Image (cartoon, rainbow, N blue to C red; front, side, top):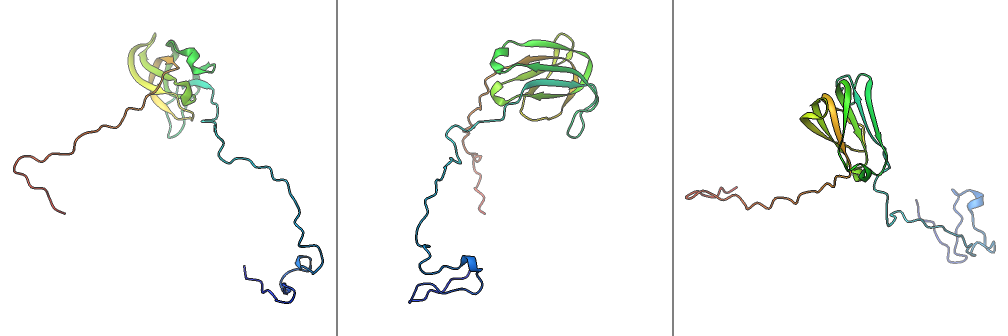
Length: 175
């Protein structure tokens, strides 16, 4: 953008590169300011939604996990109602056959987890799957799962370990 030269006589110098409708003429009323109503919306609302709501579901497949998705056909589909705190007591689900992959979906606020078992009736614990709000393949041989929601996750504080101490008669390296 180039500066527009100003003339001391009338204050405006016509620019040959501006279209005619952009030219300002003296006495045209261009000095009046028109009032416009502006609706302001806050770009950062006070209480932003933490996540998009995701239904609580566990889908188990008979095929192995692929690079991104589970393979095979779904052999067990568990859908729970929200909020997750309603399902705070563990519930065991037997898989018809053997599942090799699963997707465990829920919002983190629901606090859901699935204990994975290698035997029916939730015997022989193998692993723990945490429900997350995105499709991610979880692999293993699954014969039964125990779903619990309403689990409160706590992030442990960082370890405050003392610095490394040198052994006796050792010198600090200079670098």
